[in-house]
Length: 84
Image (tube, rainbow, N blue to C red; front, side, top):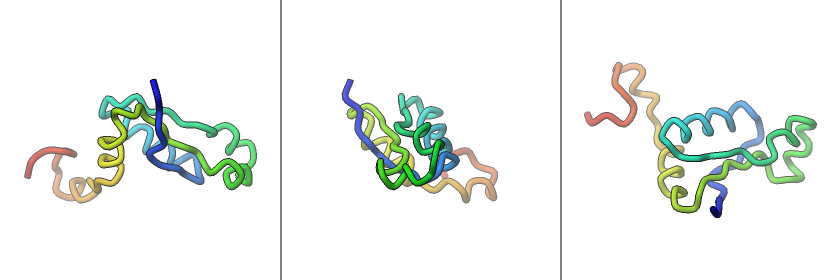
C-alpha cells in the first residue's frame, strides 16, 4: 500500500492530535520520524518534521478532515460532522 504525506509537524503533540483525528474517522494514519524528532528537536529541521502519512486512496479525505474546524461545536454542544 502506498502512503502519502498529508501534513507535517514540528512537535509531537500536534502530530498526535492530528493522528488521533484521522484514526477516529477510520483512516489508517501513521507518523514518520516521530521518534527521531523526539530525540532532538533540531532533527525536525533536517528530516522535514514529523510526517503524517495515510494510504493514497484516503489522502483527499484526510486533508479535508484536518482542514475542517469543528471548534465551534464545543460552544454549541453539537457533534462533529453532524448536520446543522
